[in-house]
Length: 491
Ligand code: NDP
Ligand code: BG6
Image (cartoon, rainbow, N blue to C red; front, side, top):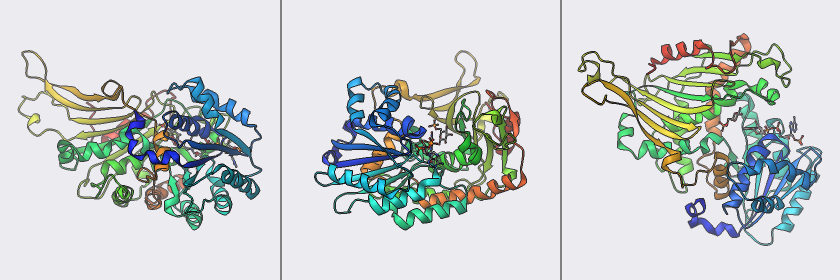
């Protein structure tokens, strides 16, 4: 099914492709990168001549890498044992004394040249490594492994976090852009690969009833929610330094908001779509004022600092936050936007919720009977769904309005369709040279401009987050905050 979707582009199946996974020993590579690559392989979406080299500092043989990967390749997409074995045969491993070691990269370059029997011969570098080693790695690649333009492309997928604030972003960006053009760089934010996020363009701009009410005249507030039931697990070293705002708000939620709030791009498909879509997102980001402490409420789950991977046992790092912002454009004038995210909560869920204003006549013609507000909910996970909370007459002899849902449930509606996970889609986009679901440097600059003053204020003032119970909805104060700051009414 997925195969048919891009049938028109089958020509690149004949190309040569080397994928170099940097940080192959790590969490992301094993849980996301390799499992996405096997999906593409099994669905015949990789070129026939492909090799996948894993690189990291840990000593490992090819066989040891394969054994490590195996448990992550079986679940979900149900690939057969034969497919898994065939895929693993394409995967080799090389260790390096450091990520900037040029001798290692020279030997990888030699390996690639020997593998590439004809052109086009392309090279994909996946940075599944901590940001602290991005620069040295990029430099080593630039000096040793870039393909001649006439022979094929060289593309880098760079993971978040891209900086810690505006200044560190500018430094990292400067280093990368000195050596690579935007054309080479794919800054990944995997929320942009989620089905419901990719659906926003079609939903908003191809349905007359949505586009007409998608503005301040009809919308009371927008609430973007990310909830995880798991805590920080073994990622304390990273998380305690970055916190929930840098982990989720500055990237995933802000990217989703930009798509939800942008004006129609000039084109949403075709070769220039990436430029037009990202121009439209940038306009939204530039219309948001930098945040301050008054705009936010912070929480930390109980027992957070007891995690063995956290060294600062007095840590004030937030694992939960709710904040309000405004987008200063005519479309969004005075519409409160709430973002809420937290770890170790009562459920795992990510959704976009739009609450509409009270229906004018609904407030008086039903003789005082409550007429709940309409809501449009787009659930990104688990189980993608779109539903509209709509008032209907209570069946029977009464004329009482009751709320019901008009819904599209992806599981039942699109059962037979191909619904790949975000990383699988995005890696394929890189191979196809599509930039529109990747983050351009100016988007990141404006995103950091919005969040940096708040992050610095939190760090300077040493604000103590409200402790909430693991497995709860977060600090109870967050509900009051949302109701007061957004005029949201829980239906
Ligand atoms: P890991 O901590 O697992 O690091 C990946 C690999 O990098 C490790 O296996 C290790 O390999 C090497 N490494 C770790 N620390 C250092 C260090 N201080 N200096 C040099 N090398 C080091 O990270 P993840 O796999 O979790 O994440 C990789 C990247 O992806 C990061 O930028 C992260 O923020 C991002 N990311 C991760 C997500 C996830 O779910 N894990 C989700 C979204 C983004 P070795 O020692 O063998 O060289
Ligand atoms: C990552 C964050 O970017 O996204 C993690 O670093 C978080 O902390 C993850 O758990 C959530 O991704 P998903 O796709 O499971 O919602």
